[in-house]
Length: 333
Ligand code: COA
Image (cartoon, rainbow, N blue to C red; front, side):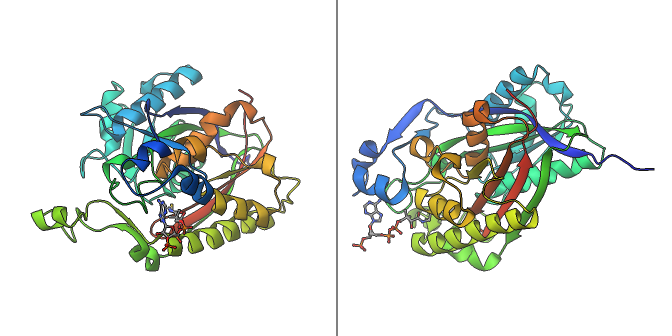
């Protein structure tokens, strides 16, 4: 007897970005930089910042999930599991997932946070998919949200030009059709930790007056080294997943790449043999929202995606962490 394979399919997308815009011109007033340099070296024109006092990552996740629930026509009580992918949790504990479900007015889903820097959302999708494929869960929400402005040093021109706030989420449901999450390659190498990290605030270096004076609670990045690894690894892993699934460049409908730097994205697309019109990009408007970039792309471009389209998601981030995922899109919006 042949059993039908159950796959996890994305069946709805939600998103949220804060209203406040921080443009390159605004940054010129904070650090020694200029609009032309930022656009030509990164592709970023502006980013969104969550300015309201008392608002955090959970508040953006709640808005994104509410958006998703409304579009799918279901209530928060119908979610079985909620995974919040983030490097900027509201608190060290409890998990942001607990705060999000509470703010959604439910205690039905269980949930947890997942941190893998800019690869968090891709890792989260793969984790969420296992619960669907095993048949134990019917509705899994995976959020990718970050309030990077909480850990960005606005006196450091190497990092403050890059990051922004925002994020999105997807609903995973079982399908017996030949679509959904088809394959994933996820990688990590802790040798890269020294090039992109936050020095203090964890158990290694708890907060002290000294760590604050030394500005160690912010993102630290050796840009050139990260750029080199990001370019090579994101391109390699994207090509690898194409080859493993016997996809030629004509078979790929869309590249959905992490939005860290337009130059990294262009190189990845070149190695994959993809023309510019197959690359989804919104780095110009949001910058790098870390865990938020991939769901924000799905949210922004949802209407362009058609059932049966072959999507390659690709990412690279601190850790180092990186990976790619092959998704056959499951619905027309
Ligand atoms: N404005 C103006 N000049 C700047 C600047 C800024 N914001 N930041 C750096 N510069 C200067 C440097 O001081 C340097 O000047 P010098 O040549 O006189 O020493 C020059 O610009 C080139 O600096 P460099 O660091 O080589 O720039 P770059 O082309 O590598 O771009 C990054 C810097 C950060 C944009 C780029 O390295 C990058 O995108 N790295 C990877 C980011 C990433 O992917 N991060 C997250 C992974 S998820």
